[in-house]
Image (cartoon, rainbow, N blue to C red; front, side):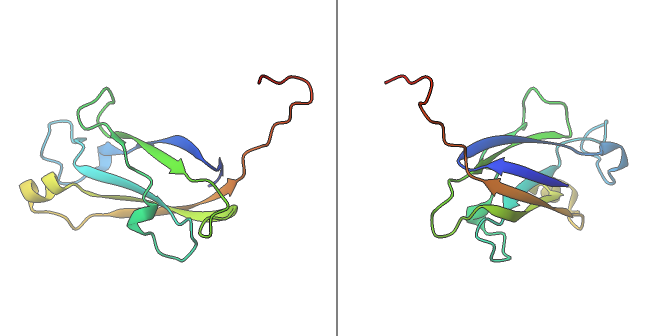
Length: 136
């Protein structure tokens, strides 16, 4: 999967876990229990490392929210291009699902994790001209 993103924009990424196949999910009767932490990084400086500064999930939903269990809405901010670290073009995006801290303490099971990588292309925003209509 390849995605194109505009610079200096906030996106909402919805991730729905396949909870019917979860193992060791004894915290709720449904088996789909928010026992996972979902994180997203975009390697914006293309150094091959997904640094803490590149994490794209400063705001997470739900913990106790309106969403059904197993669905995560993750806010991703794509910074402006042009500084010395961020360039337009393709970058790797990594999504990682790991057991939450609460789950690890309660169940003492934390061997599971899943990582997926995708390509995202960051492009500049379009510049608008005042050829036909301008407000000053």
